[in-house]
Structure formats: C-alpha cells, structure tokens
Image (cartoon, rainbow, N blue to C red; front, side, top):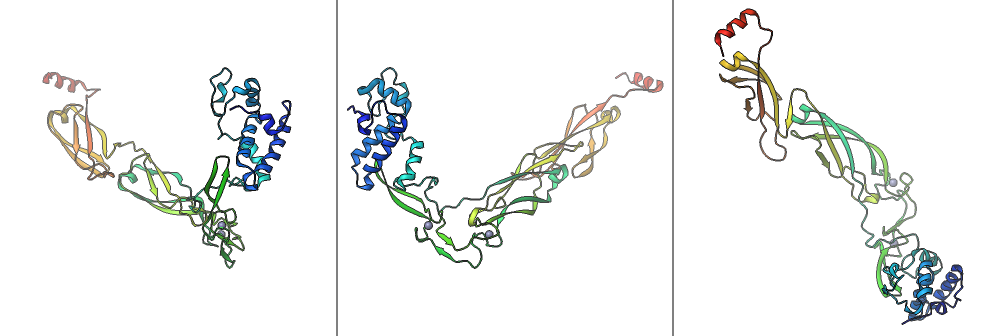
Length: 360
Ligand SMILES: [Zn+2]
Ligand SMILES: [Zn+2]
C-alpha cells in the first residue's frame, strides 16, 4: 500500500518543514479521536508526518516514492537507514511541541514523566565514608565517633512537609491514592495508564501551607554525630553497613544506609594475613644450635617461645590462637614466627679460634 503523504497532509511537494509541521498540527487537532475525529484518518496523518517531518526520511520517501512501505526496511538500496522506522517511532521533539496544544490527550503532560506506582516513595541515598583505625584497634575492636553532614528528617514537620497546624487533606483528584488512571488513546489503540497524580505529585495529600524549615520536602541538612562499634577482627578495606544511617528519605520515606569503609594503619611489628599474624625473630647461632628461650612480641603481649636445639634458619613456629578473631567464622587466628639464624660477624681472634676448633 503506497500513499501520497503530501496529499495526506495537504501540502505541496515543495513545502518547507515549517509548512509541513503546521499542516500536521492543524490536521491532528481536527482529526484527533478524542475530539470526535476519525481514528484511521488520525493514524494516517501521524504516519505521513513521521516521514515528511523528518528531513532524512522525507528525502528517502521522495527518492523511492511508492516503494516506500511502512515498517519495512525495504531492502532497496538507500533504505539502510530505515530499520528504526515503524509506527512506534514518534519524534519526541515534535510531540513535546504538540502536547502544549493537545493538553493531556496523550495521557501525560509535558514536563512530568509520570512514574507509575508513584505512591512508592524514594528511599534516602546511601552514604559512604572512610575511617582510619590503628592496627591494634582492628585486633580488639573499638568504638569511634564520626561526624557527618547528611539529610535528616525535618524536626519541625516530622518529615511530613506540612507546616504544623496547616490543614492536611486527601487530594481530591486522586482520592488520596497518589495516582490516577487515564485512558490513553493513541494511534495504537487505547490503553489504561497509571500515572502520578498531577495535583499532589503522588503524595495523596495536599497541605494548605508547606513547612517553612524544609520547604515541604520533609528533610533538612544537618551535622550528625554517631558512635560506631567496630568489631574485633575487621580487615583493611572491609565496610560496615549501618542500616538507616544514610540520608533521610523525602516525605517520610525510609532512610538510606551508611557504609563505613575501614582503613587500618599498618604496624611495623606485625604483618597480618586475614586472622593470622606473622613476624620474624632473629636468634644467634648458639641458641639455634643448643636451643633456648626467645621473647616473642604478639598482639596479645610478649610471650616466651622455646626454641628446640638444632633449629634451622627459616623455621616457622606457630603460636596457636595468638592472632585475631575470625570475624566471618569461628575462633581465633594464629601467630606465626619465622626464625632467622644470625651468623656472627666481627668475631674476635679468640672467638674465631674457638670456631675453628669446633670445625662445623
Ligand atoms: Zn519540615
Ligand atoms: Zn492526588
């Protein structure tokens, strides 16, 4: 089926884009089904305008004329740009223009993007902040006070957005539901569309006066101090989620969460691997050969490690449960000590002689 789009819009083949546009607007008003117009005619007008209102499509239509078929790529040379062309492609720029004249006929008014299910209030934003703690604070857990600026529920109106004492009534337009149903008539038929109530913005309520502290949004910025318990065994880079400590939601919606990212200051004495601690200790040749006691510094304080005789350099000793609590499972990590045997230097003549006598 080929159509002469120019005659549909009642313009000449040499019409300017402005002439085409104004012809379309005039006809669309005249034939809109909601104004008693003919559905098929309205469709036809829209179809014609989709092509002639677009410079590129118009050029192709002029070139290929009657072989121009609706919704088909056509396969002919020069039609490669037409994949996206179908009845559904409405030029939104033009629609925006048209709507000012059509009022609400398309079921949505310009400027408002009518989210469906608008009674659902938007939860407050999550917040994230970093906090530094010492190595040993991570081992034993600690409590910190933090300070943050965030949106909190307005105390003046308790988040309702209404100036106390002002009248709060159910919105008459939506009967307090926050949304309305419209029959959206379009060239594709009519549909039931749920959209935010335009009068109350989806709240279901209207106030005679907005809260003067928060201008009716129910939240204000404030500095907040929080005491945070940091559990023993937390690791570098882990985050603590504080439910509901993010920003307050608008108009009584739930607050977001606060994520505290932990940064642990390293300690020169210890190296941490998960719940385990590692360090090194140097012993002399004599102790390595004959055995003896060595003082080991652990996160739980100093303790004595018995080195057996004949200990080689690089031997690792395990001090059971002298590490950190395992935060994500049970029990306690260990402390591993690697023994390094120090070969003596700067020996006296006599010491050298004795070593030679040992001949080892
Ligand atoms: Zn307020
Ligand atoms: Zn309403």
